[in-house]
Amino acid sequence: MTGLMDPDGLEAALRRIGAERYHNLHPFHRRLHDGDCTRDEVRAWALNRYYYQSMIPIKDATVLTRMDDPALRREWRERIIDHDGREAGDGGIARWLKLTASLGFSDDYVTSTRGILPATRFAVEAYVNFCAKRPLLEAIASSLTELFSPQIIGERVSGMLAHYRFVSRDTLGYFTARPHQAKRDSDFALDFVRRHALTEAEQAAVLAALRFKCDVLWVQLDALWGAYVAGAVPPGAWRPGDLVQEDGV
Image (cartoon, rainbow, N blue to C red; front, side):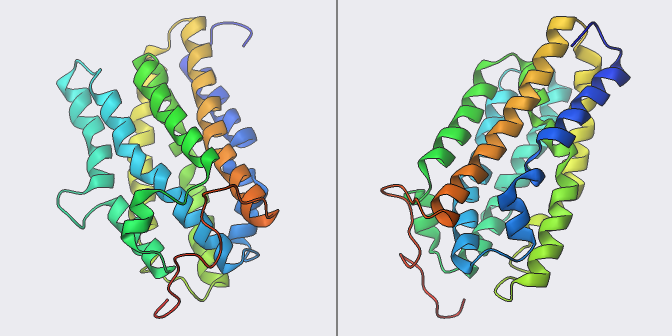
């Protein structure tokens, strides 16, 4: 930063971070969506990504506790409902479990998180801790990766349907609602940041928060590449062939 920006300048700087650092640029993203992953690599991605998805409502709950304005809380709690659902079997987490089940994992194994990579756990928990401990403005700014997610979701769904016979629109159902939800959420968060980042220090902090969130997403793909493409699976993590039922998959 070289000085205080107006809201449009701040938004442009945030969008540049996405253009330069969002995880659609990661080689594993390209490998997954171009059809170059093995079935086991897709399994590893879905298994590890579950932990991120499952912790999002917990992260959002930590943010909610620091909102004094009931209108803000009403808006923010929709994010929790999106993932947890309004009843058992509803919501994004349940739809993600439908994907992992279609890939041969039992729900008990997935939800136990026993097989996830250490780097996945560290990155996701760092994000939850960030949102719990940092100022509200920074926690909200860190969610602005949602500005860029509709593009990656479109690439993910079209690419996986085109290249992998073992997935379907039904098993990728998690992504059906996400573009609308992400647009709603990012519109709210961007408006909040534009209105409340009023000093150079605050603007620098929100830019750093978004860079941090991009790093959280990037390092999860780094871990998948190292373990399942390069073959350096760490002790305790899921290994191809373990706890997978091929029948019916």
